[in-house]
Length: 226
Image (cartoon, rainbow, N blue to C red; front, top):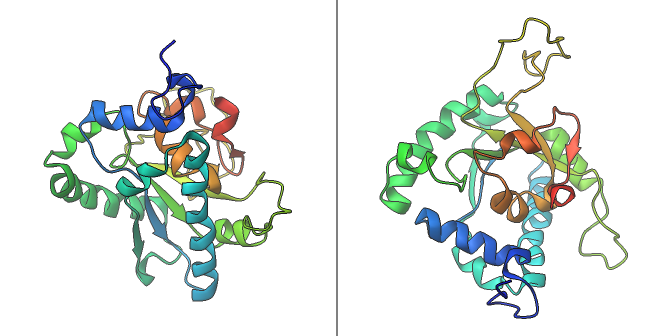
């Protein structure tokens, strides 16, 4: 098996920094990272602490794979606007789709249609942080505390912008409404917040969304699928 160029003692297929870099190269993209929507405005200090914890994990997850050089191409885009306070996913999708059409041209000189044919999902998926998600992170132990064991329940919502409701099955039981949607597939998943950017970005693509799709409030760990 081909050894990792970052860690020769590791197979390239087991080095997730190598895999992310290869994915970007195949797509012809040079930046990565999901867009984040701030959908709660109760406390500025709480939001700052959330972002501190959220961003702490990006280099932390890259380090074991000798992948810290990828921080140079990590692009954090955060939309903060009080009009997004309590916004539904439908409202965010509309905004995201307009942003993506312009951003992909500015960032990579491509059309949105071309970008959506690629594997990476910067222009297909985004992260929503509402009050419940924020509290789940802040109520957990500080990840920088040496005694913190790990994260098993603190989450953010990852949303598939290209989701289309499927109502073909007449036999499918209606689930509890989630923003008015009673389908099992609501086009969004709750993911462990510390895995959202790095693991989420190299694992999720339009071919694999169904593999990870679990209806909220269930929270998934991407590492469980590795």
